[in-house]
Length: 272
View 1 (cartoon, rainbow, N blue to C red):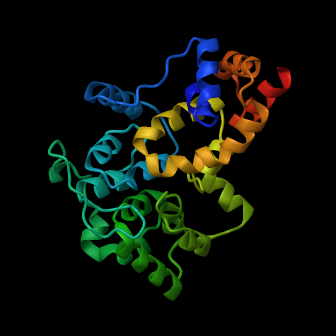
View 2 (view 1 turned 60 degrees about the vertical axis):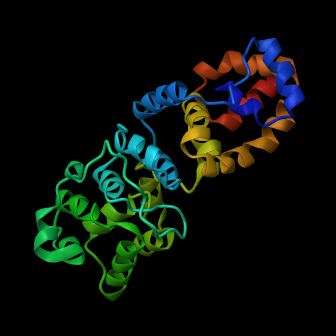
């Protein structure tokens, strides 16, 4: 966990701090066995839904298979993985599906969808269960575009809007179309939808959990994890920098600290 933050300061300072704390330098050459162990650990770690989306945005078959087996993955994610739906910005080419995943493993297609199609099934949703099921059939940019157009033409039912809004891949403009008041946005956040890794790194807690996710993020979502690094780097350098005593305090606090990473870093810097 501390290593993720050490990666945000000068390398010479980081090496000195590692020696002081008795930490080993992370192995840059990640072997297959190490990666498999990380994947197994990642699958068991509950995370906000947006974190899984960041992994899906890599559009990598191996990572997609890991997301498919994650404890926090939902039917919409698993359906998208099995169908090879791309998630990265601007990508349209289907993602190869790993051999271990078969189309038969796709979650069942909702009955209302078979009867009424995508928009019809969303409009027919008079309770949350059917709405959530129908929402899993929105796949990729074409699906979201169809939903946005249908909602502009005639607002979708409240249950359908909510089921769609809490999908982490719901386009921000469409989510704002569904609602933007404080209570709505608070509930969306509670559902695990986060604006980006920068917000996750600076506002989510406890720090221990967030650091574990971000440390694994260097493998699972390397493209987006840079946003978290950029958000934290100025504070880590100003509050901790190469101060060995401050890092020692942080190492003592981190496992039991209940606040956010910025609060942890600031506290460690002040105590030292």
